[in-house]
Image (cartoon, rainbow, N blue to C red):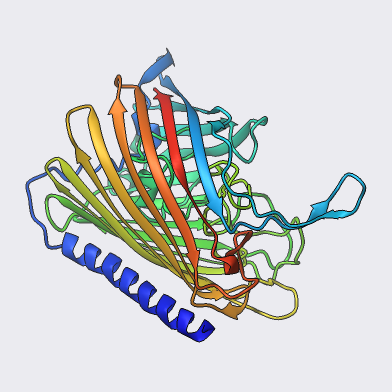
Length: 441
């Protein structure tokens, strides 16, 4: 019986993966007239327009973003692990059903940009005033200097073609980073939740990015983590990306990432990459499954010896925009410097469509999934699906209201296999609705 379930699950996943890949291929054959800059793939710093101060050589801008949500979820076959009770005895595992409808914490972000020498040099920094993992704490997210030139025209020939970023910044991996919600920065996301696999990390280092040409490129060298670590064996992170517009209405990109911290001493303070492992900004679904900082997300590996690649394609057909990605991530040694070298690996994919009904109202659909190859060092045929449908209404240029229905399910995992804190072997699932109102300037 179990073997038949595995074969059925594997067949389903192959079909789903094939559909996602086919969608990406089909998108690449569509042609319409559209400007290559109409995809909304703009750095957050370049959207700041509120000037708060200026001198002869410096201009300072700021932004503020806040979001409120109401949610109502049902969940099935969800097992919450035993925990100590008031008398010290363990409380039996729970299998909760429906959750109460209610409001989430209000989350907020603040960012600043300062331009020097007619924007040849600028600094950008972003703070999370409140986030799901740290609802009562302010945290830094990004802070870097961007060089597009030097005083007196030094190295103008170089900076005509390349810009250099130094500091802590979001790794340039995938085009989904321009379409996702990040804490209260949500208006670039047509829906409320993100894809079920949502790779994002900020790391400290340097990035070199070309400024022109039919094919653009970036290359980054970082410390492979978000925290300072000088221990012997700490790895170095490498990321690279190529992107361009093969047709006027189309953008494609190919991204890669690699880091090896597996020789670093294991422990709580050792270096770990956050790419595919966790999300500092948390997630928009509250209280479900393991009730963690980003519940419902599928994380891959332990940030030790991670290699990942992702292909993205976006096309614009007038009022309709289509987006898809396919990616693979493998941590080939989730134990790090501890004994043994078990691996964890997944294929993952997303297909999304956004249709502008009017100038202010749109509808959106998204399917995303993850297909396990190995979980916690054990082979797996399990898979996770997430379906999202929503509508958005732009009340003003800076206030956006959204509503979303989401359904997520785990299938074909072995008994006891845990996926990002969730007992996936019980085939858990959840569904429900969210309403979100956000303000951003």
